[in-house]
Amino acid sequence: MIRLGAGRPDRIVAVGAHCDDIAIGAGGTLLTLCRARPGLRVDALVLTGGGTGREQEERAALAAFCPGADLRLTVHKLPDGRLPAHWEEAKSAVEELRLQSDPDLVLAPRADDAHQDHRGLARLIPTAFRDHLVLGYEIVKWDGDLGRMSAYQPLTPDTAEDKVRLLQEHYASQRHRPWYDREAFLGLARIRGIECHERYAEAFAVTKLTLDLGAPTPGAPTQGD
Image (cartoon, rainbow, N blue to C red; front, side, top):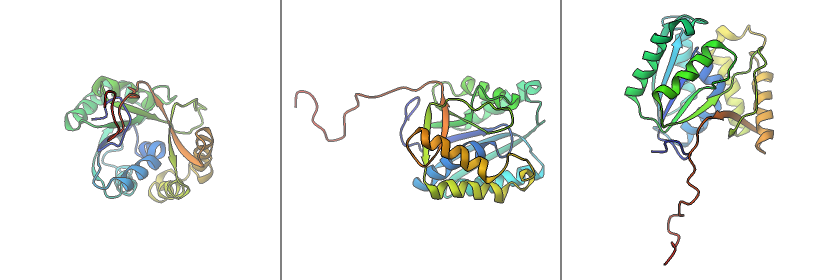
């Protein structure tokens, strides 16, 4: 179990307030993880869009973003833009997810996101996943709330391109939005890549992280040998 440390996860939880949040914020990371670890379990929760065409988009999209994974997706029907007024229902959904999974890693919105739905969900996550490593993803939008991030997942050029292609392919309902385009997604990935000396990357906010800097290398002699 990784808990608040970093390593190679076997079980992931990914949560979003809206269909497409997870893919926009952490789609490249999911592709990277799932391609490297076939059979990885991914428990995904989306709070809005259930029973609509957006749920159908989300199911197809996350299946593509999690190739070879044991994907388990739940999409609820809470009202878009009104999550703070439905706090109890949102909290119950997160707590139910926690009962179903004890993950090594949680991908969630970041707590200082300007959108009230993203921010509200982000603040619920630590109440259920108390000692788990949580990476808060970012979503570019008109609010201008992008900030300084503290963790990076490098993306190969192919993975960055695949992320953009899958976003365009699976979320037809969002293509009319002025910010929903190749330049926006690759541009942000390029900037985050520069910040970590890579070509492309996704960036995350980390609230807590436990270090294990003194762990011995397997097979290395210990003091007194």
